[in-house]
Amino acid sequence: MIMNKLTNYIKPILAAFVIVLFSCDDLLDTQPYQQLPDSGAITDATSANAALFGAYSQLQNYYSLNYPTLGLLPAENVRFNGTLNQFLQVDQNALTSDNVIITGAWTTIYQAINSANTIIETVPSLTDPVLTTVEKNKITGEAYFIRALAYFDLGRGWGGVPLVLSPTRSIADSKGIRRSTLDQTYDQVLADLIKAAELLPEAATRNRAVKKTAQALRARLHLYREQWADAEAYATSVISSTNYTLVSPYKSFSTAPFLSQESVFELTFSNSDPNTIWNNWFPSTLGGQYNFQPTADFIAKLNTQGGNRTSLLATVTSGATTFTYGNLYSRSGLRDDPAYILRIAELYLIRAEARAQQDKVLGLDGAAADLNAVRTRAGLAGSTAVTKAEALQAIEDENNLEFAFEAHRWFDLVRTKRADDVLGITDTRKWLFPIPFVDIGADVDLTGDQNPGYN
Image (tube, rainbow, N blue to C red):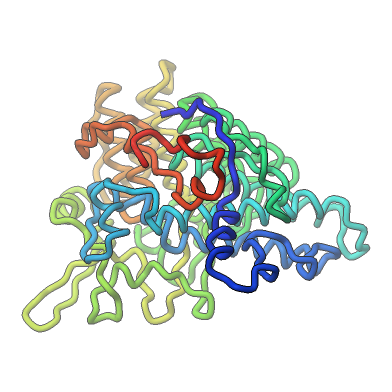
């Protein structure tokens, strides 16, 4: 799965530029979406904070629909209950490089990266007296975290990607940037997380990055890289903080007021800046489109093995028909449900898996303690797993139930190389997403360098 071939790269925004170029008469007025206009330059404390809010907004853009779709719909918990081809392709693991969900996710992720790059390059050298060194460090640290999250999400979806580490202000800025391997991509994520942790404060903020936010993502990164000792250590660092705890009952972390002690990092939305994923879950009688439908098998699994996590399911009757729908996003009238990026439950299960993988004293006993912390919160008895294989399977099953409608299941099956065993996807080339066609078409040097298995 690691992509070793280097390739020339042009930013996705420049692909958008090419599309505009051929569809607009006033060519001289065309500007790439990610190009930084002079009017948006960062010159003082006000514009620095505005730029940071813009970077968080880009995270919102890709986590409000496209990226969660890619993280859950290819797996077995949810099916697409509609006719739109772009969703059917994801659901059926039959993606093409012109899929608009793929293109939208890739493009908005790189927009977040470009926003972060601009902050990282500009803010440390600002001389506004209102902008103290502490505040500059905080803003810059948050930008490093945003870039780390964005590259991590690209890496686990597409494999090695081009590492753009300076702002894109013109078409020429993206020329000559070669595609990196997955290891190189994850190395950059690690470097950014180390820098973020150095700059960020110790605080309990849950919708902006702080030191523990960077450490939590670092635990996940080490898990993906099978660096078990590091995954355990960084998960422990977050779990040991008094700022985070498993909240009971399970559903209470996702009902207002938000920002509970369960959350290590979540993205905040509002009625004026809505989370657009909710209506894909809700039936039409509740104002939704019911595009994402829990499968019958998963409904049965959640009802028999999920404990109080059955609250993730809800029903509504319309006429003679009763609809069962996913209820993680539960505020359809207000549309302000957060996007949950890192929860303390994940840190417990990361540490459980890391401990189970290591031959050490805490090994299976430590893994069982962490696994059972999550099960106890769900109102379930302790795990009966005895062997290492049983423990790892129990942890996988718990992850599946705990994060049923979050962007986890597909990526977990790919990282553990179990997408074949569970989903029957024998062609491992399909475990990576295709690079968007518009990016391939925007740069002749990319021709022939698509992820294997795609045109």
